[in-house]
Length: 91
Image (cartoon, rainbow, N blue to C red; front, side, top):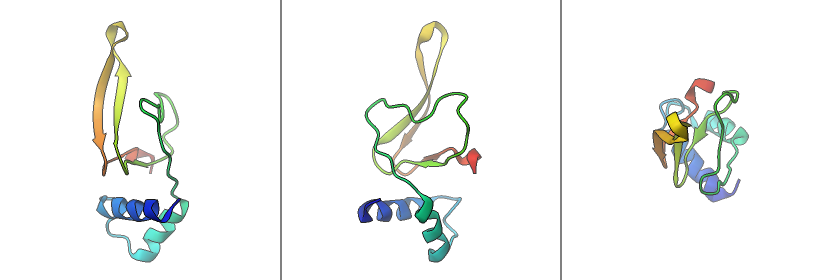
């Protein structure tokens, strides 16, 4: 993780309800195990039935949670701009 990514991760975590009350030392521990991943447009992060074992934060860009509806149409369940999280149930 680059220094810029670490700074953006620290800021993102600091704004979350889950991590906002952590002190610098504890936040540093969380960042030590955090990973960043660059995604291509329309790349799938996880699918229905995958284990819920991670928390995802959107540093830049956006994510869409979708499902397949009747007739094979894609239905958007949630739009997540930069600064939002998904997968909170995992932790």
